[in-house]
Length: 150
Image 1 (spheres, one colour):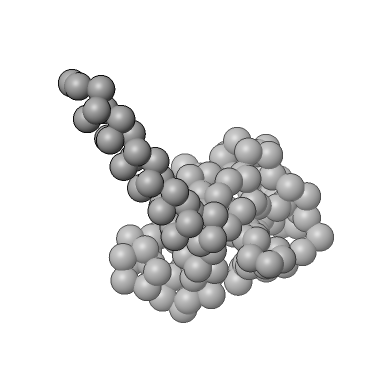
Image 2: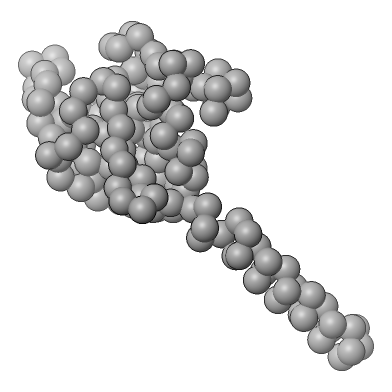
């Protein structure tokens, strides 16, 4: 490849990168993380209630399955994702599931962290050893939530 073509290609790549950052990147991305607090019993063990939060001018937290404040940060749950999608998974009626049949708060927190590519799996969440294998990472009805509602 000639030097002139390579230089032109790099300039075009740089221009596209700048365009991406200005239009799609940080302005539409939100920082997300999950929290936990020990509140419920699973097979005789105390389980952590979990919820997720996304930053858009301030942290907003959601969990239709219970409390959404007063918890402690779940390790490895921080990442950048889409604020609207994170909010939709906990506020859109089409994304709600039958509690303890299709999932629990653990699956709901994972749904909120989905676009950030994170889950609560490695954060030492009490009870996830049981709910993860039983309900899956995102719980029942996840496909419908993602494809139809969010």
